Length: 103
Ligand code: SF4
Ligand code: SF4
Image (cartoon, rainbow, N blue to C red):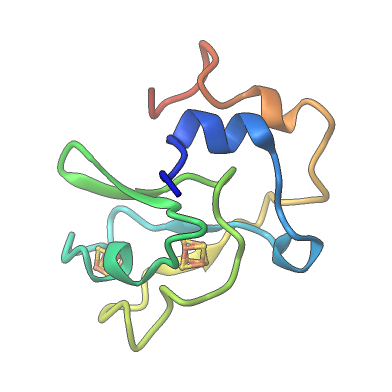
């Protein structure tokens, strides 16, 4: 099976309900850009990307599974997003839109 592109996966919006935890976010000021988390994010999610010199988690793809947390992340700079609440209906419309910072 060919892996879907990020856009295709976002568009399909299929996430097992048990994966619908709050997405995690990387605190850029603490991250040392080691890419370890990127290699540990399960391929079915593939939520971590290099974005320029930064490493970012795309929240729409993050399951909140925690596989990127310490000891994987050596500096413990991955946190739950405190602004997360159950996804609003328009939340999925943001990726790839004009306000998407990662396009
Ligand atoms: S919590 Fe899981 S899905 Fe989200 S970025 Fe970390 S490893 Fe990937
Ligand atoms: S494992 Fe931690 S320090 Fe390394 S790139 Fe990921 S978030 Fe940054």
